[in-house]
Image (tube, rainbow, N blue to C red; front, side, top):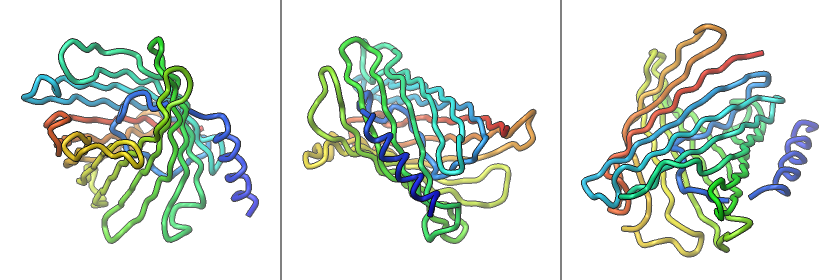
Length: 253
């Protein structure tokens, strides 16, 4: 009970200081509802979107992150986001400096559903860009040999030039736990638009595709984890294919 009260107090405290949807779907990453106290993580996530249409071609994103598990229910991270929007004439730029936080409720397997609350504050780096707050639940459920994780997020801009609407996005991952070094699965990502004002289906962002997952334990001081694959665009508003990868090195202190 005490841990639950601490979790709620920390979440409420953080929610009072947050805000910016800098760039939609800046990193294609499914966030997991887990915290390992004393664990330091160094991570990079990247993607490259390609298409036969020049207006949706050459989309790029490279995100680098440092994370640390401070307690058995709270992990925090600092993220550096660089992005290049699809289309001609755009350039890769440092878009946002983001503070991320996970608040986990219970131990893995303690409840019917593993869950956590995720909250992040993004500071827009380009001159005149707004800041952002993004928050929502991280949910995970094992069904047979599959491990299924869903992220549901709301994001709202704050500060200079901020809009007055709230955007909805989701991320979904299913991994088949085979016990092999490499395991198969798939991921899906999407952003339909603003709550209550979803865009036309043809203008929405939805991507899905196969992924592989792997881990190499006892590599130096820690564990190397990785996943990656291809996402297929489901609407004409986005690249036809998005190549994505995620590499993470974990060290426990």
